[in-house]
Length: 333
Image (cartoon, rainbow, N blue to C red; front, side, top):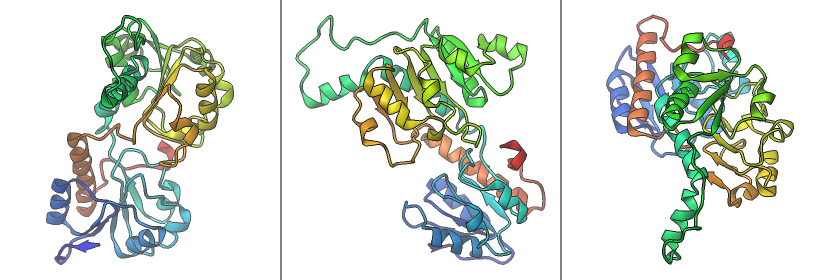
């Protein structure tokens, strides 16, 4: 850990991963901060020590903070200011029971993630990675009227699973491309929002899946969404359908998805997240009709800096004795 010289009466903040330089510099101005020297995740032992040594922990999605780890935190830790919107890697209920508040950074990654969802739809349906590989290898020998034939996304039925901020941003973009927007959500949107998005609600996820051409997954990982797209549900989809996932890998039964893609029971998939983190099924990696990205959905300079700004606001508000604006409660999950 690289320690910045402390000042009296400043909160001790430990950051678990390297953050953008501007964010780290601002944290150092405001707090007694320990920064990570290398961009590697902390071990469980390092996390436990960081939680004992800090008033505020700033983790990321790569830090699994469960009940057992929280039990080692001691009495000092009072805030976990997550750098990211998703908090499924944090046992929020256990943290709250120990008097530890949890915050996140909602809304910041909405537009960037929606952009990536559309990019993956285009990459899969227009076979962009195949064309790129051919050009980079020097195998291209000229234009042909039957080469690299993909499909247009205009006119296709897009099913959106999860119609929160990101799902709605995807719908707005899909409208521009001339897609028909359908969605399934725990709660139906207000009529005026449906009208704005030109979106059709399906109470039954099964019925929607059977009718869409492209499925965009924008649902969080919770106990109720784990393997929501099970083998049974995946089999409901058309063999010409494409799945895009920019939310959480655990929402899909990845083994079932891999089998269906390899068997031709689904036309393709664009995945930015995976069920087992960076441990990706080799058979999925080798599938020719799949585009895989290394969790890049929110990876823009603007987005990362805005996430840092939200973390700082949450910590500063907490330090001033007020409720942080982005408080996460177990009832919200």
